[in-house]
Length: 313
Image 1 (tube, rainbow, N blue to C red):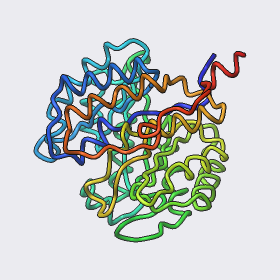
Image 2 (image 1 turned 30 degrees about the vertical axis):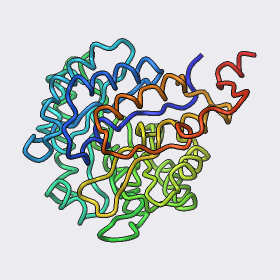
Image 3 (image 1 turned 60 degrees about the horizontal axis):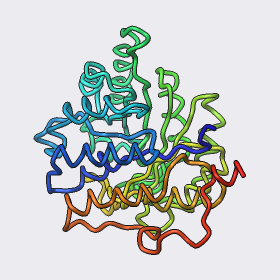
C-alpha cells in the first residue's frame, strides 16, 4: 500500500539553521537514520551554503554522503543559488529544493538578490540538471518563501505568488512548494493561495510548508489538504524558524502532524511510537533548546489504530 500523504522532515535544515549550538555529525546521522526507520521517506538533510554564513552546515558533504546510503530514503537539500545546486549534483542528492521569496524585501535580505535575479539563477540550475545523464538528474523543487505573508512587507499579493509559481514551472521546476515562512497564514488564506496556484501550474506537484508561529499550523495543513495537496514539510519537535524573518518560529511538529493525519485514517507510513523515540537524539544533542508537541506530552490515546492497520482490517 502506498502512503496517502507524505510528511517530509525539514528539521535537519530549517530547524538547525536557527540553532547556535553545533549538532555533531554523528547525532545528525542518528536522527536521520532513526527517523527514516520510523517511516519518514523524505528528509531535507542540509543546505549548501557557505559555512561562514551558517556554520551548522559545515558538514553538509558528510551528511549528504551518509544519508544517500540509507535504503529507500529520498535525500533532499536546500540551495539558494546555482553554486549550491552544482554542489548537490556533484554529491548525487536526490532532490534540490531551491528557494526564492515572493517578497522582494525578504529575497534581498535572505539571498541578497532581486526576485528576477533568483529566477534567472534557477534557469541556470535547470540547465545544470538537464546536462546530467537522466539517472543522475535530481528532482528540482521551486520554493516560494513568504508566499503567505512577510515580516517586512506584510500581506503578499496572491497574483505575485501565482506569477512566480508559473515562472518557476516554465523555467523547468519538477515540483513546487508554497511556504508560510513566518506563520502569517490562516486556513482561508491557505485555500485562496493554493487554489490560485494549483489552477495555473497544471500537473506539477505542489507541497506546503507551514510554521506554527501563531498556532494555526495544523489548521493550515488541513486547509491545504482540502485543496488536494498531499506533501507537507514538518519538523521533529517543532524546530525551525527563518533567521532572516523577524518573529518566525518553528515548523509544525512532525509528531503532531503525523498523529492528526493517522487518527483521521490518512496513511503517512510513519510508525508513531518509533518517531517519538527519535526525540531522545535531540534532547541529548540540544538540551537547552525547547521541543514542542502535544503527542509527545500526552502519548497515543487508548485504542489508537494506525491508518494502514485500520484500512487493512
